[in-house]
Length: 459
Image 1: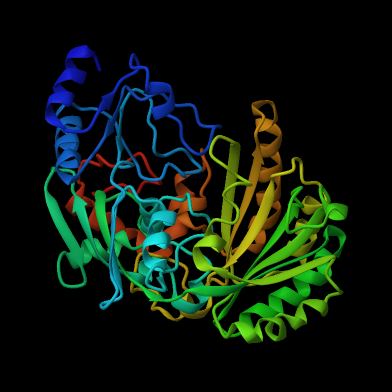
Image 2: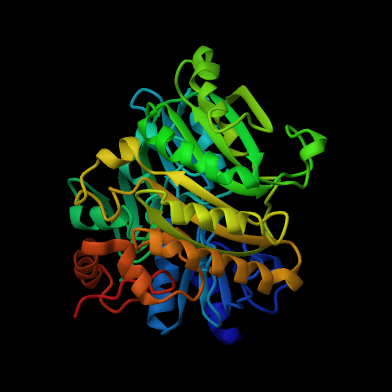
């Protein structure tokens, strides 16, 4: 793009259009993962749906590459494209809650913290992630899971409708009764079908939850995982707990004597009666008493933001994931080996439960391809120092290769790492892929929206 193109785009939209020569450009192109270093020709900061429509028309008519940024949390850096245009929704941050209908209308640039804050004022929430800085849009379109998933399902199970700008620049609403095929595809099919400028979610009564953190020395990972793999799936839906291998961070609530130690553990969220939290978590002693066990009542938005300060924007990230329906003894061997060799203080592995309510939705009801999964796993190689980028990436890849034979074959689409093959995308959608490709042909026949984990239009 040259200066004339930039000025033409500026004339077409109300929001700022930022080019490489503008002083705001270095900051505007920063995203959550600092390992990604792409340089768009322009970043369009959209103020409303009209801006999005105009930007799509301009990009398409000029044959430019297009990427979409919501929260900028994409581990693969899909919100930036070299020499193309990023349609940046971050100025679009409004949330409107209807406490009577128990719904929320959420603009496309919102982060989870925006939704959590607005809904919490009415004692409501919807299942979505474990960090308040994650973008609502990317998380939702990939399917979305989080602390409330065992109780209330995936994020897409609570999506009622979406407003979408299509590749031809037109605007449609997708729901069960309007553009139902598009609505089906949006619930797990990623950013392949258009730019969602607004989401309508169902909300549930969630106010103060019980939280817990239990950690054991990493050399006890075998005993802990043998217990956890049996305990959690049979636990009530009110109890959620993701398993992790980690290095204990140097701060509260952890006591100083375990700071910097390699551990395994579970982070708990309990939506039942707070008075029964301790009794519900009493079985944590079965694999051996934890080195540290902490419980407390906590407002739900505070739980959602608990890790924000630990892993802020601007770190080096490489991640990969897989779905699991069981934790095999051989997988436990891998968790023990790589957990004992975590390369940096922030690198980690998480197993997020996706059973309970999420597992009771029909396999064909949404584009999410793994209703029979019990865990969605992710390995994250993380460090602030670019000099360690290769080290954390290699640890992640080696760990993933050790676990993958014990997985279900595909991954949560938002956990597919940079540079993985197209076969991984097909494995993610299993038998849903051909239907998605047909819907892609209808709504984006020329694959304008391809800066994503791409589903090519069917021939």
